[in-house]
Image 1 (tube, rainbow, N blue to C red):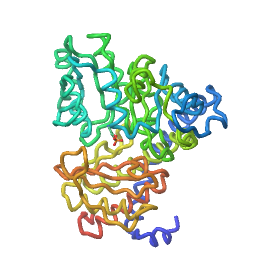
Image 2: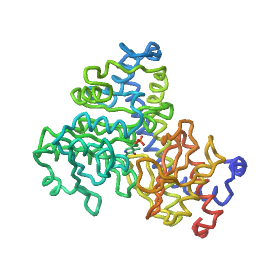
Image 3: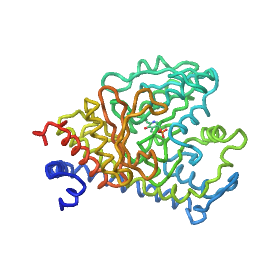
Image 4: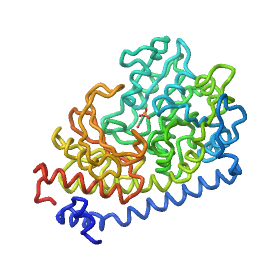
Length: 428
Ligand SMILES: *Cc1c(COP(=O)(O)O)cnc(C)c1O
């Protein structure tokens, strides 16, 4: 590789040489990722062909959005691809948290209990559920919450889960990705096991999987191993970087019907919701998603191997199997977190000249630092790094619309740590 273009971008020869060494070790790993991407690309194309996607699907609708062919057909494409009876895929779903809140409040009624058998859910859900006091939380509506933590080794505590399921338990929420934690992310097969277990105790429990960051990482999705609903954000994996907003819920017809009534209004449901001309980005983004996810995965593994070699704890490590696109790197200090994020920011195509600062982000309980220079604001399928400023000072690194950009971002993060004297230089 011609070093000059990298030197121009600010990467030194030491960091380039280190990165070349690391990449040589990852060739086999990357082949496996390409193979999964190829399979998932075929899966998406097959779903589009099955549902006869055509130019009419890309037309804009306004107002009520009755008979919106593009919207209705996109939902069929998602349902086919993720193997569910139905789907709700909408720009009116503002983000992942909103999609999850819709799914939870569509199913739960006063007196019901929600169980998380996999420990604490994602930060923003604490307020949705009412774990942290919040206006309009499920708790305010008389819905209780119970939680069973994972065992020390990150596996399910079956005994306690069995005890926690009672006559009030209506719904179980399972978060696939680790989120802002250092526990392992669950594989689709592990999720299948926990769902089977829960249903063996109480068959009518609705199992919802928070699928954020997991789509297209494996060849199957949790909806194919028993989940009644899978939920995610379109500015993460399935939007392929092109969707400028949106969320999805895929699942049984009964669940999706309720979610649609909750999202719009009882009696209206899926019939309303104009697409406002956004359909080309939703279709094309879904088409691109398997390839984009593969680039992000390569970036995550490259980051894991680099930082492992530099002496940091990384979760997952560079050899473990992957079930989401997130890479946690425990940097051990606020200064290193800031330097890492500076590097990611400096490698961006947009806003590369700004310096990320920690801030009190709505929905989170400690200050959060975020680095992203994204075409879509807040998009975390684009190269981004973030993390709450608290021990163990872990940054969560994810995304990259192309592998080459992800690679540059990681090299730049190492460069910034190196320049600030925050690395053990002998390890480089
Ligand atoms: C991102 C994320 C969410 C919330 O999504 P937003 O789009 O940020 O509201 C929920 N759960 C997990 C695991 C996530 O990664």
